[in-house]
Amino acid sequence: MVAYFRAQMEEREAFFDPGWRHRLISWVRDIDVVGVRFLSGLLPHLLLPAPKRPMRIRTLHGFDLWIDPVADRGVERSIYGTGTYEKGTLHFMQHMLLGGGTFVDIGANIGLMTVLAAHVVGPEGRVVAFEPNPSARAILSRNVELNGLGNVEVSAHAIGAEATRARIYEGVGSNRGRATLMGAGADTTVAEVEVIRMSDYFNATERVDMVKIDIEGFELDALKGMDALWKRVSPPMLIVEFSGMRRNSHAEGVDPIHRYLSGLGVYRFFKGRAGKERVSRLVAIESPVDLPAHDNVYCLTAEHVAQARKAGLL
Image (cartoon, rainbow, N blue to C red; front, side, top):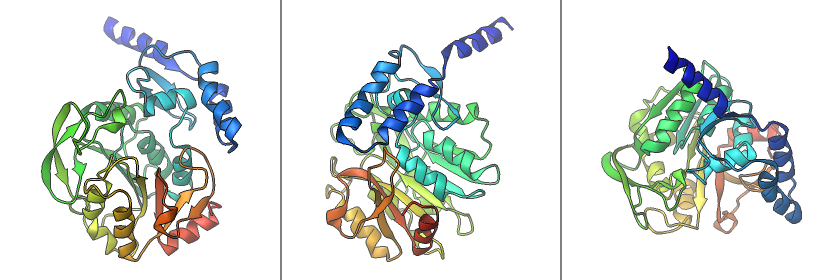
């Protein structure tokens, strides 16, 4: 009993709600002017104390997450400083996911997008979060439990082009989100994981509305393992991280991903005018020249384009 009350007290002490500070930082970040963007980068340091421990934080989206902004200087430090991460991507999800829908999060990290999607699709919906990195998955599972989400499945599988086993490596520096199956340039093996094809995870009758893929260079392999989804009457919306800053699993840059998806003949491609970190309208990608250097690409069918236009995203 004493241990229980001590744990409750420690949790209360670890709770942090930046409130108006996050709202102000977010508002300034959405102003797409160079000088203002520079100021928005300084505001977290000016308005927030330096983090000293793991904590439960109230996000900009109204729900809480466990984060460790001391150990992780990627997603978790961003959530501490701004209350969010990839705000533009989350804005898209909030407007395009529908109640009762199914969202698949490939590379779920600690669960920011997973938790937001679970709230959007509601108890009648479904969220499947794939995260093979053990340290990230532990926090992901804790955040799902923290928010009382019965509509989320957490899987330790990695997603690839074929069923196999692979080693997952820690990312460079203190960034949990850079764990990768690529191996090149990484120092420490985190674990051996089972790789599955997404087409084998979902049967032909299971609903899949939106898939987000951010897996540090393994995106093309994951897409090739989703071939059964392309044959559906309504293929899912895709949010795929394109990055020329790192080589993908076939050492060919981002063009092969665009070429592969273009070859399906079902998608049009869009990016956020102000990037994934800011709320902005989508603009069409008409050729590989328009692909972002390091950003998310939204892959939409004609039906999805009409929905996005109705939602005011285009």
